[in-house]
Length: 70
Image (cartoon, rainbow, N blue to C red; front, side):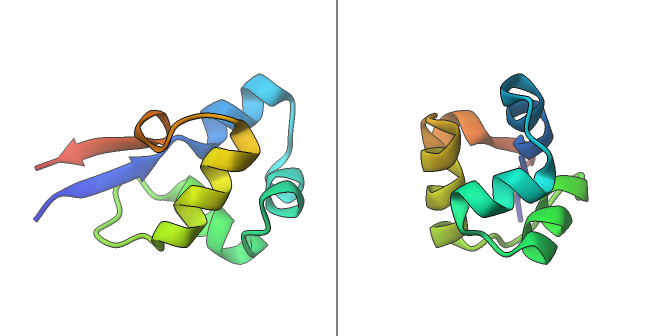
């Protein structure tokens, strides 16, 4: 089973946003966002959250999601 990592910290740093600001701008619950940002690899991720994050960062989903293990 593959694992993915969300590049939340990188995009937040580029925008100069804290994780709390990312949460406020995206509508993704802060505790969920923090879990996603800290994890080196996730087996499951809420697709709606990925969509919201990509929209908040103004990037394509493919840019936000990094496959770390196939």
